[in-house]
Length: 640
Image (cartoon, rainbow, N blue to C red):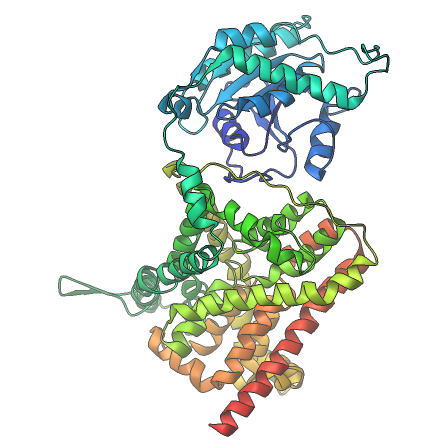
């Protein structure tokens, strides 16, 4: 089956088009650098394989993603495609056509799709697509990847290209543009150099745009510039960013998010619901009644209701908060605001050995550490890349948010500010670590690279894109909750209910269990940072498998008799003082990430030596911060 490469500038709608043509669900973002590696899938109809390449401005490799794309298209490459689908951002055709001209010079069939045709119509821009076809010598079709307009015609053109390739016809879809000769003598008498070829392409692109594109005489008011004057204002930008993120936490952790979470945890997985005066029992009560009527052994009944539902059921109560957080961040990403934040933070990041481009991995880390670590490969500086890989998992991910929300509800009446404080602490840990490490890492890496970013236009987010983004992230959380975390919750319950009595394994109380013995043996290591009970020690250990396990483990250990959240929160407060739980929170936020993130770190950082250093630094840094917090808590308690 023929392979067609999808190539285009960053943020031109390439990944959206890939999803639309193949039915896949690759991540879409309104900023450059979303695609960091090659992805492939079969085009609808099965006519060809579509290869999604990272977005590039040219085929001259400068960044890691440009290297991937250039290598795939290079003549003689084993991955060289049979044809190219070039997506062009219609709102900036002159810049995009530079890459188009380079693709046409490759000598393989090319189809050009001009994206954002709907936006061009609203702006009154007229594009003569027949002129573009004549000038480029290949099919040119208007499309809107977001709405799907023009995609049937594009699929038909790709089908013709694939058919021509299978017939081994010479350039079945038009002839490639005649490339500028690489060896000739200019009027000045000197040989043609690469900079001359670059200038030739830019001049030709400008000439084509002049012939094919007609802009209205009276341009409408530039809304983007007006918004940028506000969001990038010297004095207003940072307060606005703080206000926006505070609103995100207010909606997700408190107000709407907390109300929905209480409905799930206390109603569905708790004491039940009251509807029109009728009380509907919760799942644990229904299961207990069913097991009793079926004469199920009490130990097995407790295993299901306390072990499985007590851990996983409680974790599922945080799904509404996560969904609202995902929705908020996806909205800010899609509308173009977060790319402005990256630009805004560049000057501040420079002082810590980073650049504004590092904001992209840090933002992804708020969802999951694994894609954040993968996104770090787009960083041009080796120093920036290593600093980002070592520190980005300090930011609370979606798996850590249940820990934050649980302690906020149990200790501070669900205050949204506690979640904001946790994220601020993660940012502070990143900046402090980069300040401490940049000198050491600079001795082992190359020079820093300049920060270049294209600010995307402000766009009203597409509902389908938001739904897809929130659905994928929430589904990933649910998959983990019903697989890895379910198994861990089962193991925790078994280890907390069985022990050795007179040389035999028997059902025992919590204090005589295997888990109690493990926790008590390791408690001296955690006592200096405020741990006074063995249960949080065990929760920390299971959190290194998956951070959500910390909540599931606490749910099993502290929720063995009561199901309502109020009893669970009382059990937490009775189990350890507030200072100890603060130490538990910060150690779990800042220490080594989950097993999946550790594997991703090893893959991206490239050596066992740097992996061990990164994990050791993260855990040591977390322990040191908790020691400082413990000392501060003791001093405040004494003076109080």
